[in-house]
Image (cartoon, rainbow, N blue to C red; front, top):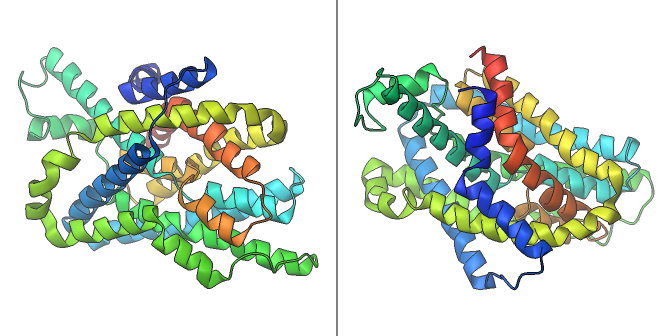
Length: 361
């Protein structure tokens, strides 16, 4: 599948179209609105589904396959916020607090962007199998998990590692802590008031007890412990409906993004450029990290998506506690109104294309 086909697969998916519809609905001042409780329920569902399936897949993976990508993920979670911080400080001229808060968001991850990346690759698999059947290379009626179908995915680099949700969990917290530590150290050097933020203990509690981290890590463990038998019991609820629920969530995300577009005028051209170029650079770093650690092309692409994504659940909560002087207008607008839509609409097929060049497929 070439880059143009991958772009159309992404743009014409119900998930992306629902996101675009949400943005349009806001811009035309529609009264469409999700109840807060429904938004919370959708968020919980997605985190539980990602965690459960990831835990099950991790239970059937070998440690020898996981430890190198795991270390690479931690490295990305440390390096990306450091690089982001100094770019924002030196080139963007942001103050310590805003630079650190934005860096925390860009070093951390978006579970929804991750979910869309998984859905994107699953759709590519379906298209590849359909094309193989039409070409007569595979018998009609071949199941998606049949050996012949798996061979088609393997030939096109579309199989991703089952432990990818574990990398999502690994990458969520370190970047936020690194950015906060940088801000604390820098504020002392610059003789700025560092006393208004919460203690590191309070920050850790906010991170680890927050719903995104708690549910993701908790259900990774549950999925790992319960294994295949446990996953088969809940798969009808958390596997097949996943893309449908993701479609609803992205409709709501589109509504939120549409409301944030007004803030683009306030953040300035530098942050808009940063919100597009930094994810691309991070994605390339993630893809090369995946290549160097022996991951499949699809796995490296998803790792690139993780590196490119920006948090808008865990990081905002932590920054409110640790960096109260940072302006939410900057870090929420950058992550929600710039990077999130860019990754969902353009980034996924772009990172897939970059990965095909890196892997020579």
